[in-house]
Length: 147
Image 1 (tube, one colour):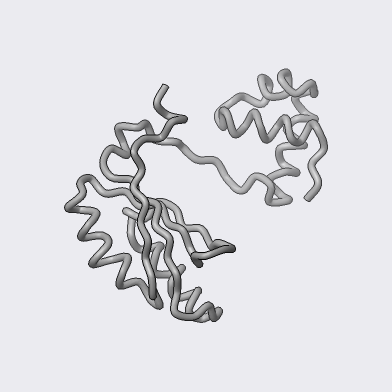
Image 2 (cartoon, rainbow, N blue to C red):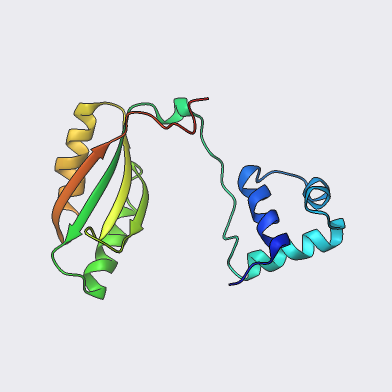
């Protein structure tokens, strides 16, 4: 999926403000409104833009933010599917990434307190299908949101 300079500008502007009006977006990237809308729709169709989301304020994620590296017993299609299906059932697991490297997955989990994270670790993460190893790193603060 090669993006030209205009596509990259559109994506950059939408990442910064997903609610920007098409007229303002067009003005900022140097296109007419109709050409800009056509480009955005093409980016959506091609899967470059897969959706739009709301970013919650820091107060909505207060508590413990953990980045958890998870290694599975086996990396078979069935084992990975079972794991991926299971993580979708826990709202405390905010993100889950299939990785290349030492761990098979990295999840971002949020818990209100350390005691709650301990329960999440013991009763959820360690019991996900096929998990053989868990390594947690706890965030101190998000430097991009501490403005």
